[in-house]
Image 1 (cartoon, helix red, strand yellow):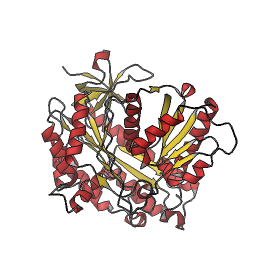
Image 2 (cartoon, one colour):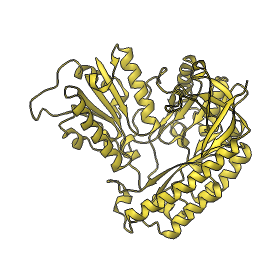
Image 3 (cartoon, helix red, strand yellow):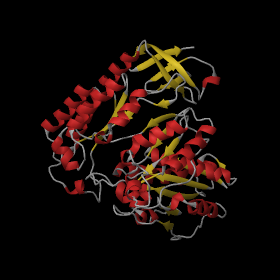
Length: 457
């Protein structure tokens, strides 16, 4: 069977797609471009209505490019709206998040790939979607991680689902309650990636900071999950001393003293350890908006945490997510968010304009912000983040950092791209043999927010 796969959304989706692709290849199937595929799979996102629209557009685009292929959608949008998707004439199957975790998805794809697409009208799409709720805790993803993905830094899923009830978010209803990979499973899967030569592994999940809570709640467990995420990272580094790990998103109030200490230790001369880089999804710089969002942290949590992180790990890379235009965000609330970015100088940020998401409490809130005003706030905040990023880049000049050379050269210049431990990107010249390798680099010059440098022998 010839297949093509596309992924929308978060790193968790990317990790799961990588594993699905590798298992299809192991069954003897061939990955090809869309035009030659017998089966096309979209692993979808549903975090916003725009993400839903992107998925539908992708399905229609692929159908135009390949009228005979069997088209399958899986992932979060499949869980959120299976009936709506099944009504799309372009689709042949709708497979939920639970079903994509076991052999069922692979079997369905294999069956679809063995025959021609039905031509009769109203044939209908196959739908296999287990409904998830905020009270449902499905089994954890245990499929082995991909050892030969297209990305330089493979993703290791150590957690899935979410127990929080943020008023703007649908994740708990499409991924279920939080569940954690037991330490022995995470360690075994990390060992697999290291044997395959991974220069760096990114730990990922829907809510990383909650790792271990469900394990501690299991009365059958004997202290499993104690110490939370920091304890797991420490265990992985102790059992695999040559590993280089990087964290995904962790809520500000969940970054405890042991995790700060691990980030402060950073990586050693060989590039092994925990990278001094963390993403802290703050969402707003106004406490009233945070309460309306049902976020568990407050602005003070971030204001107190960032100096501790920078004291422990000078030069640490800090990122965040922020939503502008949330219901009730007046000019004063936005100014407080802007001021937070001025004070904290966070250099990496995803800035989103809020849009109502059906099925979430925020969708029924009044006191809406106009699209025009929200777009203007987004522009102002993005400009602030860009200024922070230029200052961050300037601070890298003259300093050596441990880095990994990405497997693909920069598209327009052909330069090597070094991703430093603190998430700075440094462009440099060098031979192909360095692709995918750990190196030491030094940033020598800056043009805008782009750094250029050289290898340190």
